[in-house]
Image (tube, rainbow over all chains, first blue to last red; front, side, top):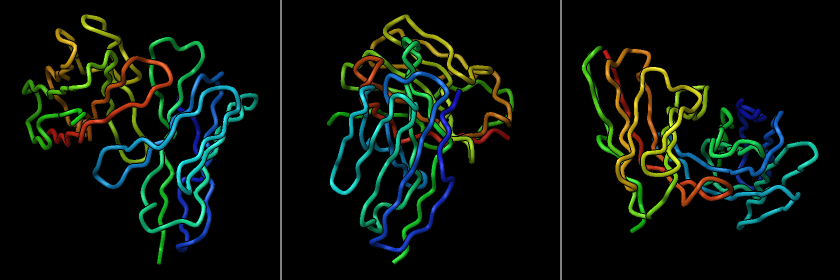
Length: 112
Length: 113
């Protein structure tokens, strides 16, 4: 069952902040975040393991609320290079080797 | 350089003509998987493999086959392609399943006419 991402799309001006959400109906073991440019392979951003850990990487950070089975990706002071489609991928606690189930993606457009 | 290599990058074929998309990784990863990507649907898992000779169905396995005879290779086989299999395909690998970064190949854009 695919996690649900919101919003589906967002348009920002350079320098503005964005939040992308990912929620699951299943108990999660981990949440992964990837960014994909059009026609290219998804590129890994970060993983969050259950435990409510927050991670950061330059101006991009993420949190994982284990109780709500939700994760949020925070992009601060957005740059033109942040444009692309963001996917969350989830692994659920009882899933064994099922691997990642991805959401449908959030299209992020950064305008100058 | 650590990488996942898919071939071909682009393929146009006719309905019913068997084809194979190859995937190879040079990182000694145990876990490999195939995804298809369609507009508005995100990445959906087709098949995955935990190790050599161990494969299992993902969410959309119908019309596809895989094999894992060697650790580094995980080919995707379409025995009788149909137009609804026109899609962008990605192979991915990780050291093992569970909480580790997945490395993606560059993708194969398949068109079945």
